[in-house]
Image 1 (cartoon, rainbow, N blue to C red):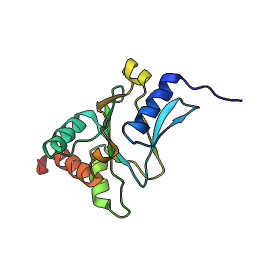
Image 2 (image 1 turned 180 degrees about the vertical axis):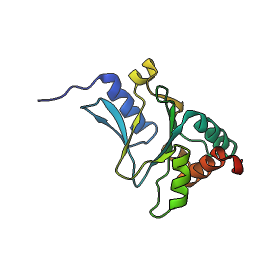
Image 3 (image 1 turned 90 degrees about the horizontal axis):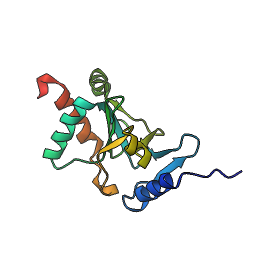
Length: 154
């Protein structure tokens, strides 16, 4: 049996692939557009108020990239370059944990906004992607998160 997908979902997924060079795919069961985290991309999710400060800091440094907003959860997900093995120390992981920020592990997936998500306000872009080359290095987002979230580092 063939599963028919909503054409707007398919159109958006193709747009992510063709215009932004993001290797997005559609999960027919959940009807979500997914981005695999691993060798090409990483992601960091955090509370929206911290995300606003991080986004501002990255913008000032010329490193702002795509950010997804999850309004109901009041969380932002920054799409980044990949996490390199051994680049995230226990101390930094603990500091991010205290800030309620999580770094997506390789093999996980991030849900990208669909047209329906945006229409309902369920999931939207704070900053939409421009090209695959416009994602900030994960290290820059981690450093901006630590600097923005810690009073002693501001």
